[in-house]
Image 1 (cartoon, helix red, strand yellow):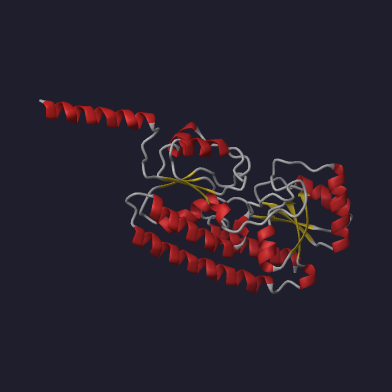
Image 2 (cartoon, rainbow, N blue to C red):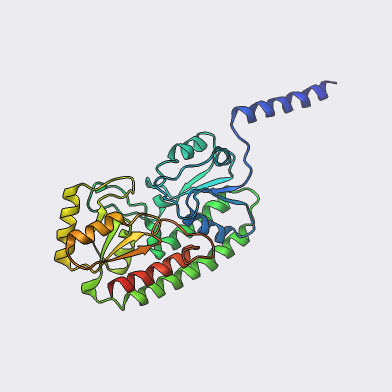
Length: 301
């Protein structure tokens, strides 16, 4: 009788502690952005369930989550997010999950981030590290180690095997992009974008960033007339032949800027911040980067 009472008391205390400690982990891996989601799925394979919060063609700076997704975050085995201020609308959701004891990984903080050199975001970390394949190799290293350490019951041998296979694909991507960009003369390796998004690509492959239509690291900012006029002068002085805009963002400002510059400038769309739907040219990270390399070469050569 005493033993039964003790067992009942232990069970009751366990239930109370679970209720006080927040949601019970489901083991599901939740990923905020679809670019990192694709990377995580390549590493995980079929060893765990992966939920990606950001839809195709969405803006990582402004997308939000449903109540169902927010609940999933609070019961996840691990949350993988970009960090460095990218996911502006769901920072509070990540912080809430952390407060409930959920393990999180801010990948951007672990890949030797660079700072914006100019504009409204000058001196703050640039979160767009995925435009550099070498940093994505580092990201795979970080994600692999964290999964093995934090996700209970995951097949660690399969994760390591998958991670190495994907690293090899990233090495091949880096090599092919360098080869493609070698066709662009040094004097034409000049980038103008809709906002500051290609800093890491420029650093890795020896481009010069002339400026951005929105002089900020976020799409939520807006340029002033003086900002646009200053950029027009820089474009004219540098002889920039193309403006690169995100495929999911309106081209209106870019077209206005091209008209103000008084010269023929091509408006070239890139998959710079989001994957496109499956089966399209930007449907995976590897495909997105190959498509972007082709577009940059075509726009500048």
